Image (tube, rainbow, N blue to C red; front, side, top):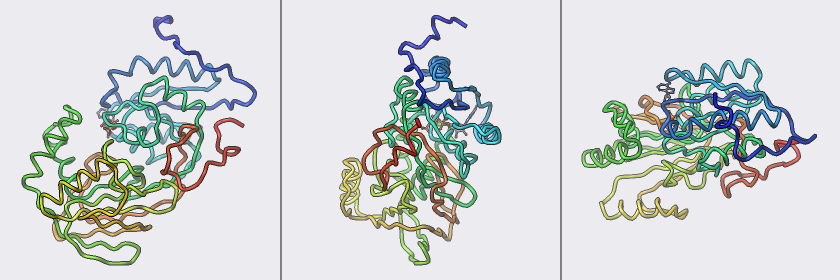
Length: 333
Ligand SMILES: Nc1ncnc2c1ncn2[C@@H]1O[C@H](COP(=O)(O)OP(=O)(O)OP(=O)(O)O)[C@@H](O)[C@H]1O
């Protein structure tokens, strides 16, 4: 290894008495969207954290599902932090094992879209993201659970589920965001919506929908906010149902979504709750945290306070329902 090349350009602050030495496992997915661009930074991040007296291990996934296996090992070793060096799919695999444990999730964004990092305003370049690991705060947030799988961001039912399944089947994923946009355009010509029965906290309703988004957080696809009032620590999930409508009303809705308008929107039913049952006569495709994942029927629940996460000291506005208790939660004593 060329030591000169791997030395950090900005040195970590000298650890003082208030810095807690941490044990961390970095789990990286070499197939994540921007891995190739950031891979050379990983050694640097390890050095940076070691200079702050952290014990750091770097592990590469070999295949889908490996993120969960490696995270399980880290939790069994009682690591303080598992750092997901990848995208939202890698994070989703890791949280399956971190849920309910004392091990916190840190992130080095290396995916295609990096919705979690964008939502939490974790810098998308390594130098900024590694600073958050060291100087950020640890917060306790909710997770959602669909059938037997946790989600951090959202579950999509309907159009986006169909698009995710198609992108995977046709290998359009290799074209990144463009692959998704192309598939969305193609499918929007034929997708007419579906009839669905929902039971939200024991309140039943039956409706036609194009898209249902159940969100623990707000940001969707890095660009729009369907569940624009969601808080990740309020013990609730936000449910946004998009109903079919005329092309004109639909264009207005798209405009509002892209401008991230928070008010009442046409064609939208917005609700919150702790549990949601989704049933349909014909199975409807699902996506979980951005990846294709099965079909309806589905049982969704919130799991309050299930995950510890490291986020920037100055947290984004409007995504937490309560203020950080700095004494307890700052990453220093
Ligand atoms: N070594 C591997 N080989 C093939 N697939 C893998 C490997 N490791 C993980 N995966 C799979 O790759 C999927 C996508 O990875 P990830 O989410 O990190 O990248 P991305 O899709 O580019 O980013 P984002 O979700 O932020 O857009 C994960 O859901 C995971 O199952």
